[in-house]
Length: 410
Ligand code: PMP
Image 1 (cartoon, rainbow, N blue to C red):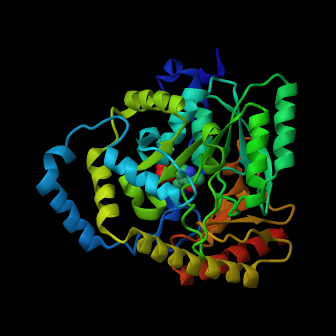
Image 2 (image 1 turned 90 degrees about the horizontal axis):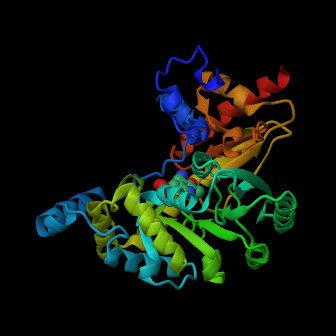
Image 3 (image 1 turned 90 degrees about the vertical axis):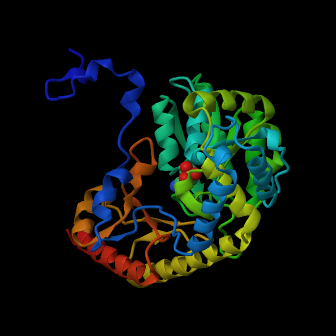
């Protein structure tokens, strides 16, 4: 009997599932969600954008207007690639990071998560290698696992992905006869590491990928959330023909609308449109029009500035609380944009095993193991400062430090 149909498993459909479902496991973060959402728990676990600053009144008036004036279009199917006017506006947004693109090469997606799924679907056969930073975004690891791609992690330091480590990983994969399909990278305000790829490294990383015939998938949902308003040149701007770029309105506007995009070299774009068609027929027309109108009628840059200020205040709160409370032997990154701090705890502490005790002490975080495909990360954790108030963040870190101290005494 294959192990999959072991007698303890009560799922009567077990023998029917495709082999690829074996890689589909619940993310540790999703499993945590229910517990971490209890009001008495300070959750530093999730990555929910803080939407409190959105102008809800004018948005709701605008949505009503949209239905009244353009309802038969807004509520109808649209093109698989996304509505043209929004794709033009997306090109203007990408220009802020040095990208010069044509709206024809943009495909609107249901969040950039769908972009990740589509890119993996069109490029990866089972067993193909994807290179990703270690740690990496949990949702991307989920997509790679769903298509049975093998992830090889490459080290980062405070300046992001280490070029030498990338070179070594590619050389090793080649030596082992493995096919590397792409490098998946989050250059700005990394999730979960909180670091940014140094500008001096960008051209080098692109050159290494070119040398080895490896495509680059650049995932950039946080690029406009630099706390000093700073932006960095997108990898895509430096090597348009070898970079597929993923963008999103989730962090700069509203995550619930689920509107993101992929910008790809022309030939790749064709395949992406076919993949999108088979997945959803077309992205939601209403949501695309909401985003498009918002961009046309609101001070969206001012809104992003407000978001940035809110996140900066929270980043300051978490860094000063970590400084004040964390026991000796812990270290952490110091993000200058985005949502996350990556913490390393002393040897002997296992962040995954500690989590239930932390929840009992009314604080939650995301254990580092969820951000690696290979079980690494048990001495790491991601703490997010995006959602709670600064007071709650300080209280959460105080509780977390208390749990760590008792753990270290064990
Ligand atoms: N990539 C990264 C690095 C992310 O952090 C997230 C969201 N947490 C996504 C992609 C997915 O975002 P979206 O809401 O656009 O699907």
